[in-house]
Length: 184
Image 1 (cartoon, one colour):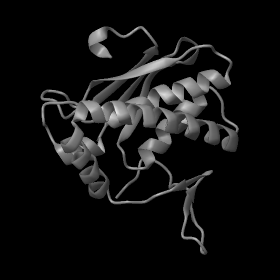
Image 2 (cartoon, one colour; image 1 turned 30 degrees about the vertical axis):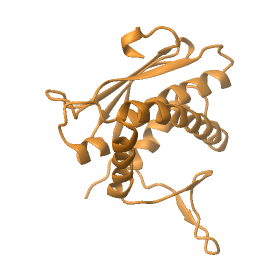
Image 3 (cartoon, rainbow, N blue to C red; image 1 turned 180 degrees about the vertical axis):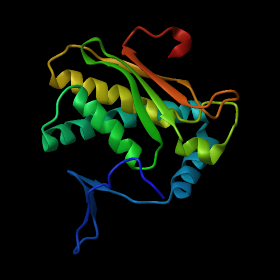
């Protein structure tokens, strides 16, 4: 199998068994295990409620990740966002491509090909990649804050490859208050 990106630097502590990549402890689980748990929660509380919970948790986690990685690698601005997309792509979530990024204005568009969720769900006629949405706003806000910009954003999954006639996902990041009520 060919790879699109270099190997991740994974270290395993011989005494604790903790896996670390760059500056953060990691978990390594099969995709089906994670997504089966994801689907079980959806079945209990519904995808809409679950999306709200995941947005908040993902936002917080992305902020933390970008902060730690920027410090570790001496990155700032768009380089942090690009590094984040590279690492997400290397971890099997799918291939994330930054189509547009304007940190000072709080704008971004991210394309997702080969989503792990779409591979598992298939064409189900709805957006299934919502877990990632908060990640992009959290990353954007951390980067903007580190640069001294007074802006907060929100992200939206505008299309998913799990929908009929769609072959890739798209996420838009915009300043808070700029999405219509139906988009929030």
